Length: 277
Image (cartoon, rainbow, N blue to C red):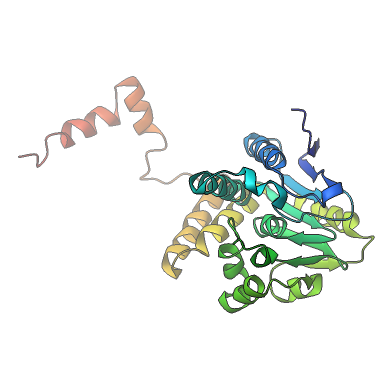
């Protein structure tokens, strides 16, 4: 697909997206957001891709929604639909079965910061700045600035970031568990490549499972989260070759249904009229 407001490329197992509106600090226009949704879906559908890196063209990552377009969003219902559209974009990014990296330089505020919160890793330059300044425009965040942020840095700090609207340095983002690493201004690309080198050496199925159970587990109670760990452990054993269990069907139930022979008809004969009176 030919994009107008972002650059998309695939290099071996890695997809690279560059937000490409540097003249307005890569503000997320409606058009750019729509293209980003398409690009994320392209990554999601791919079985070849294992990694996804998102950057901003020019000296900034992204300053969030293009405020100059907001009067075009429509009435309250139209706004509701658009915010849910953006929430789905962030959710799809977070749910990718690829490892995602946000490479941040310059400003990552508002929606730009919300993008980083949906990624697995965030590497930023020393000069990077972040915050949620929506309060001074008279609006509220719509797709992570209150929800994901509070889960990452806590309720009290999330209130500080949103109610005051200050811009903070990259070092504080690392100290507050919002981002992973701060590097020298000229070392961003190099650090991304170093991280990719490490990640590419891993068991890719294991990483997919780890990402899934961490994302799911953090949103539920301890025992439910431990259930994900148990099932992931079993799946790891299965895909490593230890899949045969003596009292499991090993596919015979499905084969029996398909061929109408064997296990399936026997089980249905015993079960279909049992305790139905």
